[in-house]
Length: 115
Image (cartoon, rainbow, N blue to C red; front, side, top):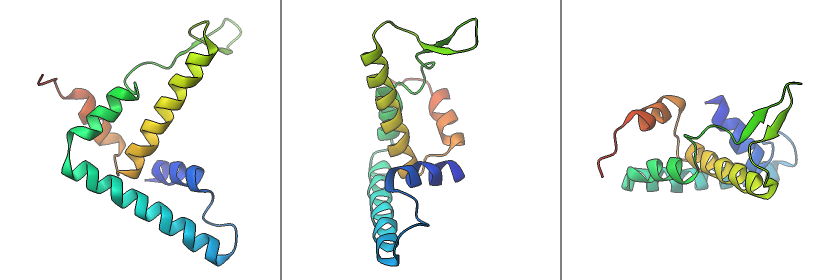
């Protein structure tokens, strides 16, 4: 639950700062967006699995540790590393808006492909 709140707060800004009208507008926008994604996931349960696959959420991070303990990109193409992280971040954000929690993510990972 707290992880979803952190993702939403990062996307829409903190709900605890600003005027009351700004706070209400941000809260309402986050609520409406979450409702849309929950409806979409309810209408098509396969949508969650598609986002997990398209966001490469089951792949290990594209970073590798050095001997000094720093993390370096796994490929020489830094642009592609940025694209990959953006894809993963957006997929996680949409899944959080739709109410996916860690237990459901594990279930998606364990389900065999029916295709």
